[in-house]
Length: 304
Ligand SMILES: [Zn+2]
Image 1 (cartoon, rainbow, N blue to C red):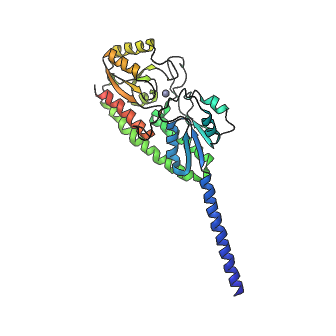
Image 2 (image 1 turned 90 degrees about the horizontal axis):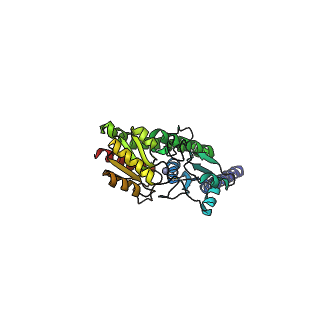
Image 3 (image 1 turned 180 degrees about the vertical axis):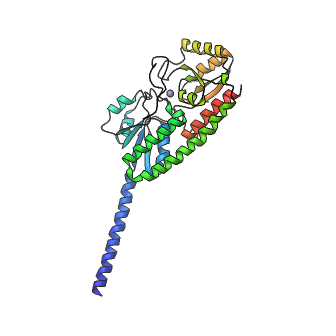
């Protein structure tokens, strides 16, 4: 009997220790969620879709912000220094990033565009450099998700299965948005397949939809809407019989609207490319951004 009581006591004590440890460990894991900082809202949203609640994900630039020439604040440095991982786009998108990263002390860095075949910029002072807006096309969207998932798994192996599963579901959602919209381009007369915008941010989208690309300035880091840039676009519109021009959410639509007036063509509205909006805006997620931008382009071209 005495032995039996001792064993029971031992089992109870072990159970108590086991339960306490389990609780303690789950507390630790909650407190030690992976913290990921990204340079802009689109990469943050892609990352959140892969992590779900398993990580803390923050963007340095805010919804609606201009992202190429952003000026980081001391608070951004503190935020990034505290991260387990920083994810950036690269390809020259974030002109501020190298200097910003140099001011940090040993935070691991991940390139979201690894392995993507860049489309070059063909005019202006950035001639020959890669066009950095690769997230606007299906194949490169797959590469962003793959690169980010691999990085998350490398730095947070314990959640690898969930990250993998979320990534697969997310790819299906992106395909669900882009593939049906891309097919709608077939009804547009090949001669009218022109995409005219303010920034030349749509090379990847234009390639996927088989559109000719024309823009007022090649990248927001460049001069925006100089008389020479405006004249070139007006000449091209007249020469090619183009009927619609668009602009983008993070810059002034005035040069594009001025061109629409001077050439007597339609202004097709705002395309979203560089930044998501706040939750109550039209594109709070990357899926919304793709859906609205692709739909606006197709609507603008088919309305003619
Ligand atoms: Zn841009």
